[in-house]
Length: 66
Length: 256
Image 1: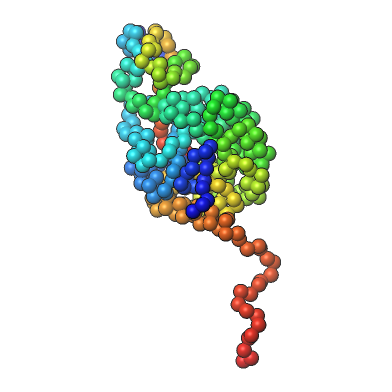
Image 2: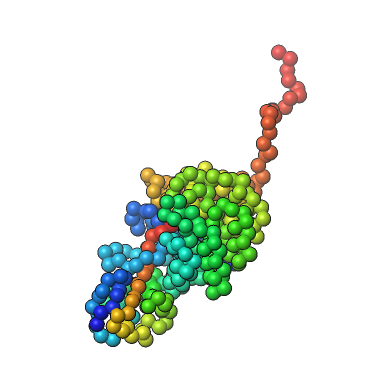
């Protein structure tokens, strides 16, 4: 299926969970966060959240900043 | 030394808060964090970039410095509130340096969006440290909204122009019930010392260190300037006089 990941159409496995997607991208748990369809997803829900075709996912992390 | 720096009930050892933006590498950030002796440093939240290697969080954790996420780049209260929520999930902290800027050219805070965002975030349990204009009335309103500190600019972000309106900073300090932290515009050590002499509880700076020719040396200079300025403030400076006043005795001069 296809989702929009950080602004780009991206093919992912059907019914992938948010946690699995983050693991696939080798995202560190600490310092990262996710927004799905405009809602910030609490980290406790990452494992249980199954993504659906067409969803808009933003994955962010802490970077250098003033 | 009996002069604790406390924000939202947390005592910070250093009155220098370091921004990490603008440094040439993570290695330099780590060196400057250590040299500055800071207890608190800022980070921004951005989209994950697969090309980036190493994590700023690993560096910060290694140095034992507390992290303060910012909402840099946000132009509306809605964006800033959302970014703060993301940062809370990412970093497990309720603290946020709230930035809501009006435009890219000046990077000056948008006072209306800033106040609205502060009110919303306080209501949601955040400890809000707003980057604000050097406006005593806005500083007052932000405190009334429940912010745990106010952080007026010395001059616009990244300009290094120092403290453009020291009188306003003094006014803000004179009526503040929360720590006043001079944020933005610091160019060199004397600017940081002046901020502290004016009565600020702390100084937040990034570019002055990260973009200095020798960031580590400048981090050391800033740490000493902040300490010196604080000591001078507490020591009580002499009043300014129009005419000279001798420091040597005027009596007992030999007749020569």
